[in-house]
Length: 456
Image (cartoon, rainbow, N blue to C red; front, side, top):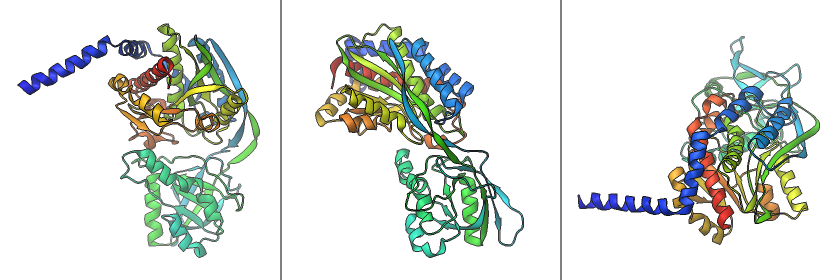
């Protein structure tokens, strides 16, 4: 009983101290505003259901930019503008199709596939060729003499032993990014890549590929996991022929925009804290988690700060970045203009890991800055982010860090379900939980408030 009483007394003391801490009180005020009056979920519904997939160069990209500008103004931005950048314009061009047949059969059976982003099409006649399955690049090299005029099937699986699923994604992603060119090196006609996921469904997952200019560009698709297993089983038993048709092609680069809103600093208006997510998404989904969630969280922080009357010391920029998925033109443009204007950025924070339950905040800066970041853990932990990790950032704020050495941070939600839906048709509004989405915004807002008040 004495131990129980001591534990209860300790918890009561901590709670009392936090209640007396002005930072705890203010963070609670932010949280209460977001959790009781938040607009993020409704805004996400409008973005996903009324606009949908927002691939760079598409008509939906333009609609999303207009939506973003309206949201910035309605949420209270003191200044809002569109930062122009040229973006690539890759078009899927129709429905991607593939089917297979065994050497002793005449009938082709359908496979669920989706063309990789930035990949070229097969042409109207399609491609018909024997499949050769490899489980790694090492196996590809060992069997390079068998590759010519075949369709290479990379059956590299997500590593289930990584609890942090982003490590699995980084590990498997090389087959999507490099796979087509490495197969083309040995004369392959096309490539099939096992989807970057450990889901139990059959939804294929797209994502960008990168062609090596030294080799021919060949068509490439991702395949759903159940069909990947089915194809793998048959290839090991007999000769398998696959028929593919895709229509991907590039149109000339077109005009896109970063959407930027500001709350102007009262003491340091020329020093900036950037918060953001990317507005574009793949065309085969609604882009709800990737990265509609990050966009509406960014806008929600702006709305909440204005609603509670917060006047920041530094200028806070809320940025919806263009073209993260297949070009990174928005992030590069933002850094380029900041460098040209010799701007001072004290922190850049990104949300691009889904709208799931917040678990951690990552930070990338000096050791001294990291220690200061760690000192805020007890203030933020009650809202979900109980881990403060070294190493954080994101694709869109990476160029700013590289150009200006700006410290970076990232919201790291629970990752277990993210790659079930990432870049697939299941990334829809219904997959997002309202409470989890709002809590992510709370944790981001708390960090921004502390950096604004105390600096790094």
